[in-house]
Length: 488
Ligand SMILES: [Cu+2]
Image (tube, rainbow, N blue to C red; front, top):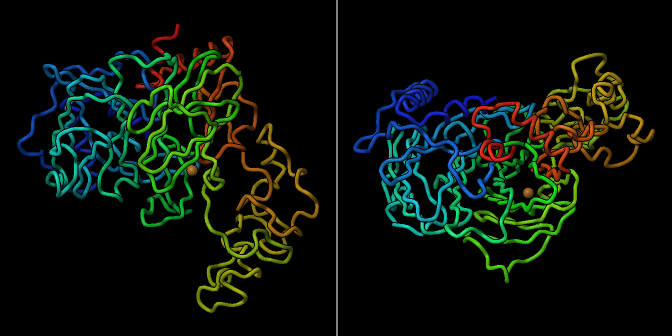
């Protein structure tokens, strides 16, 4: 898991860790990494990893960026770098992000703080960081070639802010393609006068999409057909549920720095939209809903009182954003008896001769790449996926079996509607096991994909059990850490 590395890197923001980070990136790029000229070094004091806020914001998967104090300034050390990240049990990608993760770790400060961000560029090309929505000096706006020199590979730039705003803000590379491969992160400004009513839980969710075709690991930033939809860098069911105690008041902060707009839908509740990327909305202007459209470059804060127990789904409601590894198919969606499995590019798609009926014809298109590597590859009736196999079904407790498919399913135009699957989706409860999933209905993971997770509103006994397991896990730099410290 890349998280392990993330945790280790984030555990230190001292000079030693800086050297280690430079070594890593230098190896990856096979080039020397000069130190940035004319910039202050990171203060070598103890990092503050769990600052005190009335309600700390939890960013599942990525956690927070620690800081050190230098006089009255909170000093954050933000490192842009290339990284590998597991976004799903079956998919690891090469992303660009910050301090070991994409999105980068969340920065949390208080209104009134003086903040310094030391930005080091460990990418193989220039970059700079834009502080989205900050009302501050243009010199720190992060526009490469406009407000500052682009930060060259191995270079450094130091940003300074007096935080007078409050709300859900974010940072990102202002090189558009860098942003699309993961270079973004949250920046929470806690208000000096706490919001009313008080929220017991506060979560930040980055809405992201990547186009990473099968057998590829590098997000194609020019492709506009996205097939991986993520919350905080994970696709369902690998996303981490939001753990809430029955009765808690809960704030969800959605941040969208992608190419698509996302209508985020919460089951079982009517929420109120209480904030935007411009900060808090006056209570008289809150509006109710159960779906909030989070447009590109926008933030939306919503709040509920979690008074209805259950594992409630929270997801983008665009149908294609509730799936994983979507990719355009050719031909009909299922094979018929007599069609071979696993035909080559030419026969299947007619890449060269264009026959028969190819590239998008019904004759062979659906066989393309679908050979499972065992048994006869001809005359098999719809055994494309592993799900028709008895053994596969036995391994997935709680999943419906192949008997759920009508006998004549293959004669029905349009079957199946889950591309590459001829039956229910695959459950992988064990592969995505974590304390936050404890007690979910067996087989749940077969029904959760893409930009999707749960708000788990747990009665006290179940809540205590899950929290105990989360504590027991003792995960280094646990994104839930600040919250776990507060609950007995
Ligand atoms: Cu969406």
